[in-house]
Length: 332
Image: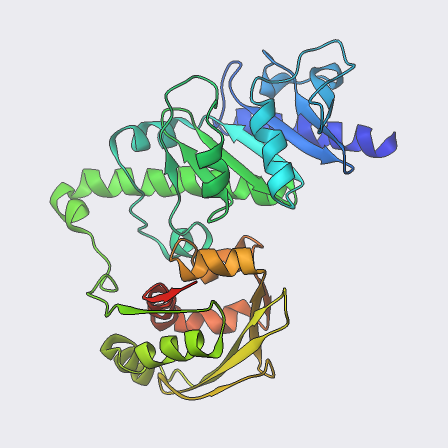
């Protein structure tokens, strides 16, 4: 009972924070938290998030979506429940930030102008919405595999995570990124429209398909890296000399990249390295498809990193290129 009341208080405080930050107004938005393996708490339908009371937070059975409380749960209950059924997330926030809604009403994607945006948000998926409530949940769930934050076109954002601080940080960071992009466009529309990363160069496609995370698969990536002029140039300039291992949590299979000034001089079958990036097969699949940036995956908790992210991030530019090369090798 104490846990339930504590989480209710958290939801009330989150609602106030969203309202005070201008990220939701009137009766828009909804908040939920997982309560045990079979139940969840969610804000009731037609409530003001900025002025929630304990009675405005409804307890729902995750399997039946039924509640014994007098208030009716939010109409977005099916979406919230599916997030908990598909991910290890503990909290979900759906908000209607005005700048985000305005920006993505006219833009298809976010132009990331700061390293913070690239590092913590990455490429934010944008899902088309045609109804006031999310009735087609499949595209949203699929998008959440690549990012803990998803834009619902004309309908705000959905964010998930292990705690409300992390989730609110994502929403606030995107609202700020949109504000920066809007101001930059006001300063110089032509330059803004032409903004393009130097990393978006033509990439060599490897047409042979390998079993995912096999030695052949990883070796094919190594071969591409060692032929890539951008990585070799930046690696030499930035003294990219480090050991980085990638690990598949499902099987324990691991490979260690031995970098020397941007070139991988050796590939080992072990995880004995100062930096180890590990994840499940489902997450690695998103990375190899190019839908999930490894830096973003680490900051959002989808991947685990052994070692200091701050130390690894000094090679952000060549490693970003490395992650782009991942998707050039087909796998099965």
